[in-house]
Image (cartoon, rainbow over all chains, first blue to last red; front, side):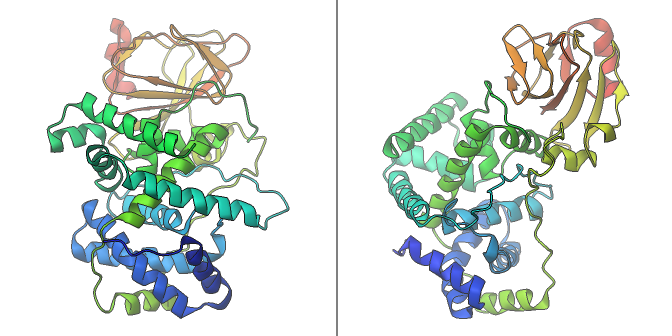
Length: 181
Length: 220
């Protein structure tokens, strides 16, 4: 079940949270993303109670880090995903998550409107390309991201040979790259 | 961290697993270190993160409880939330170790607690989770790491100098991905002592008698 929304609109929500601590904007963002984050955490192995607790922390982090969101570097959904993934590693796997060094962005910190627009368009394009993947390929990509499974664990779970899994994922990535050209 | 011309990159499989968050900590560390030094893989990683974002966006949802929002607001207002760690920035451009590695060492190369493992080669094991191990290797210029095979996967990232093995030459920023099929003898370039970060998900298998006996003692 997917509710259609305008992805540039989520950016406005983040801006309202950052600049006005706007709880209405936050509530709307919450309503859309919190159930998705909870589903993601449960598919990664959390029980309902832990998933709900972590979802609250993820959403609170969004509020707290709203000033760090850069719409020219990621869509809001991607940003939510990275925060939820880091919470998963921390809370479920009890591990540290080493992050790459940040790039220095120079003095012109204000992101360019054109960059923001093209990034949002690409995000929509990617969403459509994933939805258009053959079922068998999309399922494996989903398992790789949402099941917290390595390729060999996917092989055990699905009974498919490791080679088949690797080649299906490779095919899926080729298709996505082609669609994004 | 100064950029170099990186020739040997991470695979899609590793970048995707890093993005998905399904790698052991030691592998996460070496991926983060390589991405710190390689703009091409950084861009690839951003693409994989957006795949995660698009999947989350299009995914099924799991209803949250009625007071979930109120609880979240309480959490925000209580100030109890741990301050989120910001990604380390590239401020220290003279450092040899990329920032994610410096965090494990507690500083740059001068803070590494090296332990000799023979033939002038030194190593330092970094404190990661036990499902895989990460260590820094110091190979004097011109010296060789004993001939060894691998039971699992071994990633080696060059941080200083360069090494050559049966497959190619690897310089700063390059990552070598070795699996069971590869038995190799990395030799450090003559110009400079070589420092590498290596991660394995299984102990190395040395092909000469002495190193094999030494293996359990040195935890390599």
